[in-house]
Length: 557
Image (tube, rainbow, N blue to C red):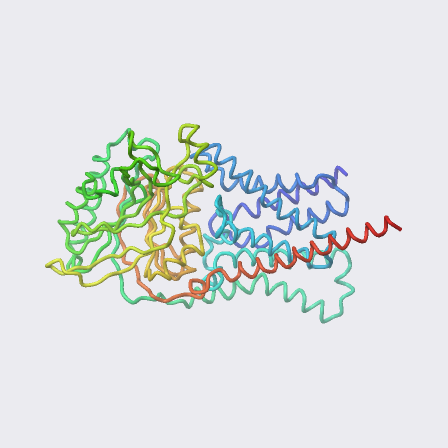
């Protein structure tokens, strides 16, 4: 038994390493294709040798995977980081536990099909429906820094990658089992050739097709947009105490002046419309009742007045005041004796006319921004002194427009942009809403400084590369610090900033109205997997009830 335990531990350790490395090391996504093979082997050994309490073995493996890849969450909140690791691992273990249970009732390959589809359905639930969601370790994200392998995400989205990983692992595992138990030798000559060939096609086929697509893809362009990003680089934990908002404004204005003056010295550089970008939550001095009275707003208008055809996109923590005795919403907080205020994480897009176009972040971070199930937790949070964030989302996806004007200020054109705010850029199908709303490019604003110099900000940046492929949209990404940069429609990084340095970088991005299959039809791969999982779970319930009925009849006899 000791030898068996050692073998299982070695197999689980191999699983943890193979599935963790792609999330940590660039260009290693291919390892994920075989990552679940050791886990399946460990489960087979445990089942055949009668290892007891095996649930805790694979729960520990899932927890270690989560910890190795997302430990950096503890940099922002220790409690939240531990909760994310334990809760996510528990859900993974639950899915795997259903698979093990199904092996007692379902025959042949059905339990393994259930495992692949149920896991994908769980990831889709995270992406679409869950109030508390953490889709960071969606399996398809393992290829975020190996994007030449996933050009077909424009058809399936990221959950297509999840299914590919499971299909590859099950194909490899099936051949290994056939070889180990002698089944392979009993196959006829054709089967011994065809079945391994099919397994090879499952593993290698998508990669080969993607490499061909990557090599032959031509950037869609129906125009361009000049973009300048300013990475402000203020420590989010100390910026309000260490640096006043006035000084922060002055620093980014200097960054813009330096970059723009250099660009405008070139012949013709000032003729086209240009977008300036600042990160998420850059300022917190804006009240939605009178945004143009904000000192930050006035400073920015001064900059915009100096340059023709310039638009500015920036993030802000904003508030809306309600002078009324009754509470406007369950998430409102008191403001004095007879007023209330609501909070939003907003993105503004303005120009020299002072327009106040904006959108609110919908996909909010639990705890720091979002009070989940507010009817339950908001009253409890009130009693605890208001520890949770109370941001209110917009409730729908919208775009913001870059506006070009002539010398007299008359509008001459508009360019619609999708503006995912931070965490929103992780949600695959959610971002299709920007394309459906007419976005011709994506402008991501974020603040990744909460996590320090850890894998967190690198992972987050790489997920924007997946969105670029799924939607075939250029991405301009502006971070407080971490990685600001430009990504083309193939997911290639064209230019990026360094870590923990104030910087301003410029590039020209392509605009496109093309709608990919994924953007038009949504997550069909995840939907089909969810349907199949539901049918197999129904079959499992029928088998269980039938078995229970037969047992009762046997006892009566």
